[in-house]
Image (cartoon, rainbow, N blue to C red; front, side):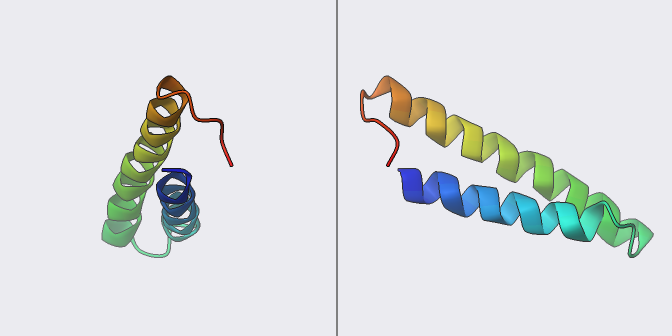
Length: 57
């Protein structure tokens, strides 16, 4: 599960770099939405792992 959280974090960082530097209007908007989704999935994965009683690796 930690692997998924790490993957989502990496995706969120890439989306942030692409989206928040305003390379292009449409691409920036899409990247910002993907950033929020990926960040939310990373947090959700970490919370689920914590509730299952497994410590983060």
